[in-house]
Length: 238
Image 1 (cartoon, one colour):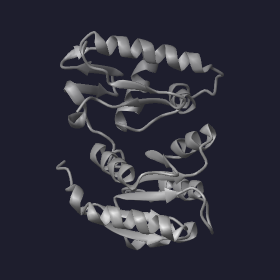
Image 2: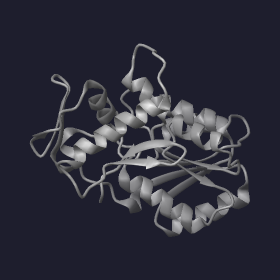
Image 3: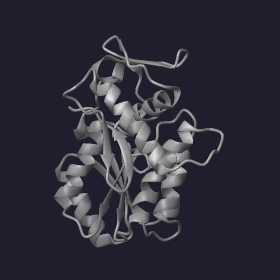
């Protein structure tokens, strides 16, 4: 799939502080983005029905509907319709807010106060890695990584990784959304469908084994990254 030109990307800014929104609009327009601004959370879904965008800069505290509720609604989405990337913007820096935003499907977060140049850079990074795009196919995966669901078999450049069923499921979930951060709880849900009680250390142990098996064939590459306080993401080197 050809990458869409960054210059043509459409950005929706949802921010009730007009001064902040004005600065973001100016910087994003100067960087070549097509931008629009809304001030209320309860306006977002209806507006997007008629004006599809590539990315939403979404403030956490909004009148009408909170940013987290908007994020959850957008991620629930419409079947067959591609959802935009979402960057949460918040002045609430507590770890639980950051984690909750990402668990609901946000691709990144930015804390106020921020540099407008940093926001532009983060917008470009999220669009570049395409975390909002359709899930990766076998042809999109790096280094000849192939996943065979029928056999629960993963290979890299023709080499069988020899994964257990749990390791295969972990790799499938992570690699389907490159750059997306998954919490340990989300990964546990994907690993065990029978609601058994397991600890965070169980996830860490499986990730460690999965990394080791991948590095046997890609010793100089790291595909699965730890994100301190949040979880793990699959992000191959550029």
